Length: 201
Ligand code: MN3
Image (cartoon, rainbow, N blue to C red):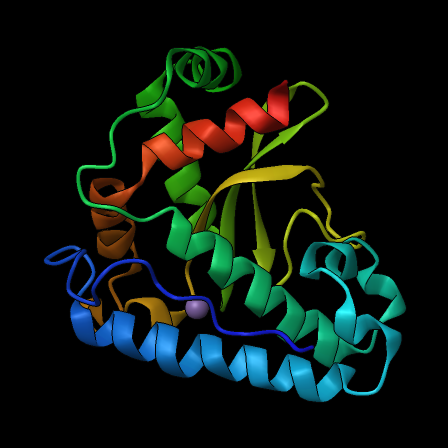
């Protein structure tokens, strides 16, 4: 058994004009595929080749850096695709009140999350994570994520944003803040709310 590229679940152009079809096609079919291929190569013949990617991430400090980078890449992108949708609803009542409790208001949350994305120097991710009974915003370098044992802020991620240049450069060039602003139009809040409900029960 080996890891496989999950289907996107929607068309490459489904998120236009906010995220363009060419970016989605290359991001999913080339970048994510490369993480999957390199993860399989890195784990071939080891006991971990049959493990769930979550279990590998939780113990990532025990693995070579190729597993950290490509296993993280596989987990993060699989998660990210599921969070994107045009007309993706709005936060559930319980998620909305948890956001207000943690950040003051929904607008404050968006400002702080965007700041985590713009403030990440180089390549990485912004995260909204449920941990110790509350929501926190963080960012990680490269393909690290909050379920990794090496993460500064650990917990169950419920929202993620890829801020690698490959996620936006074709359409937005150097304008990462514009990409992040557009991201709010394609958040699948129904999915985020579902993940929050599971994490917080
Ligand atoms: Mn990416």
